[in-house]
Length: 439
Ligand code: F0G
Image (cartoon, rainbow, N blue to C red; front, side, top):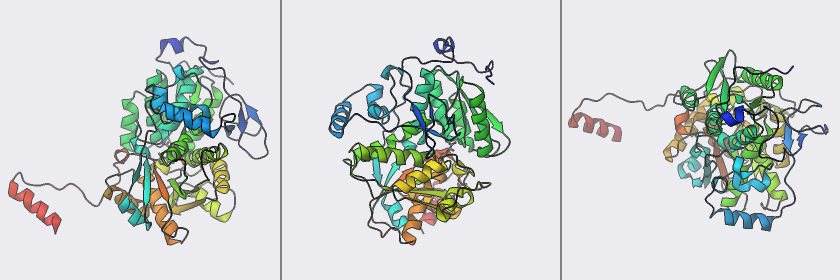
């Protein structure tokens, strides 16, 4: 039954005057199709297939060729508009259509590939590049998807954005919703989210509601709220617009490399929206002639939250687990996008594996020693590289890119071996502490 949301008030008077339905500044959304193999269901909007309840996705872009695209991108590199500067909207021919005037952007996904020699040594490979999504405006990879999700939510006059989150989705949603003048509400698992991420989310003016249970419970509730009210935009990765934004990481990564794909792209996995998005992006780039081949994707889960890695290795369907790991961002036991993720890994001869919390923390230190730093969940990617090398899947000479998903300041709950020590307020005391450190 449709419920109206008396509590949810949009801060933008113009949007608030809207009906909560219909589109503003867009010709209407492109048709969405069901991502489930063999279903064939279609929808105009929403997050679930009306026929089977599976996830929805946009069809691959068509009607534009490599030469035209490369030319457009070259011209846009000199552009100064928000749409041209964004590492997502720069690729707008490959996204659902939206009037550029309606774009809600914070200069996301402008990220250079960086060499990480100490991390390479840790992983046992000769060369490693990282794509550090912590450089995004809200400090995580979520921004690339959120700019698209919130732009379209605003265009269809949604009253409020809602998400379940382990903290990064909520921060990104809060930032973009604030920019759009839209209300933002978060369902956060009680006690399971980094305080830094909650503080960040609140700082953008979002409302945080804590829910008993874990992320999986919170997501189920968010989806139920979205199904009960058309005025609410649920912007978790069940939202196909989010996936469209996040797939642009594949385009940006390829563009920087002169459209040559690396051998491997390794990334952490929780709810598995990101690996689904990257896989889609690389496939579309190949189909458009933008990439020379598909990179192999490796998605890395934390051992205590690894239902997909287990399912991948056994070939069986996913069995949800009660998740437990130090990497709170990927403490997810029932990943909603697992079927999409499986399809993408099959398409690129990819892999899924699990690493221990200890391996994640060691990898994080290695990334720190390159002066890069990241939150624990992100370091699962490098820990995964080390496992691939140990298992002989990598021989060491491959061209590997790790996706680092979140900024080092995102999660300060994890205790490092080095802790602050008190020192007397004297030159001698400071020098002797420094000498002791050198030994
Ligand atoms: N890394 C970080 C830092 C994350 O925050 C997340 C997910 C992932 C990896 C996993 O990505 O779910 O697409 O497989 N964070 C979500 C959140 C769940 O609420 O912020 P995924």
